[in-house]
Length: 428
Image (cartoon, rainbow, N blue to C red; front, side):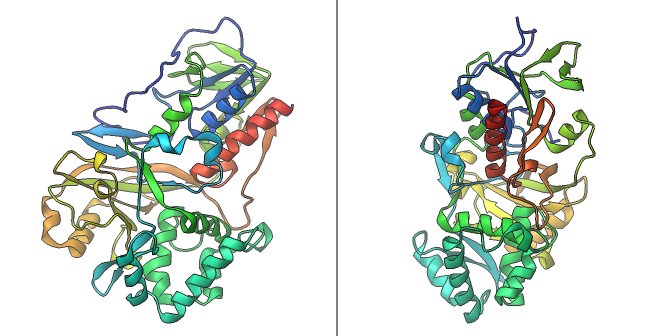
């Protein structure tokens, strides 16, 4: 699913069983050690249940993975943690993650240059710029303030699933100008939801915007895989079986590659949606992919710790971040790390167009930027169309389904789905 790292994954801080049949079948089995699977396994373990967590890869994390290359910390795809996700407190010790926050705001392209717009508590300069920028009309500024107040007070994210609509439709209804849609809303939300424009769910966009308004996005100093590593550390060493792939389901039994069979009182399937559909003999649902590219440089193009938003008319890049400004640990001393990303339907990243776009934005300095890694995260997110419920519970006989495809396409959704599936398994 992901482009492999030439130096492999960061070493895990726990040990795990990688092979050999157990003496007896466990009470509960969780298939997949991504965030949803880890949330399910830890929830079961904390409830005093015997659980085995099976993972086909050589490390936990699923799509949340990190590689180290030449001293650079490279997450697989451009990923951040929204620190105000409601579910985080149930699963993570945020203080121990050594989070490095982005500025609460964004860099927007305004009159041929990037202008940093920020929450007053994050940057006085950014707050002043927000009052001056041409990215928003005076009416846009008033509407943005009013929108933020409504989001903070609403219990239903401004709408129910039945009232949900494309995000662009909601923003037009609220009266935002077409210019703000092009320079701010579209690159922000299409970069997060991996949509081509603003066709994604307005209810999901409202959830994301409310989290961004309440607190910063951040990355752990050691990379995003520190999140699943911390979760895995809450399980006994013999619970996790790496390099253990479920090949098929026969009745109530799991057939592993190599011929071993396992059964349990309840099984939580917490893989990505396509694998879950294959095991359960269902049709896979549609997904969205992200391309990304990491560049190393001798110096950063600016000192901003905000995410840069790039309009669709400029090229394929939607988001750019100077990761070494946010988390100095992401780059060797004296070097800068820049990541660019965007939604895609192709199998390869558009590197030629990316280089052209970066040069048009930052000038000739980009010619010396070294491409460290690039790739496409296929099936990076399940498609979340307007009207989709924020959480679904699916059970087929002995099997419960977890994953962000059962909730929102986010870290929040993965954690919620794992916990919900575990509680359902216990209740049965």
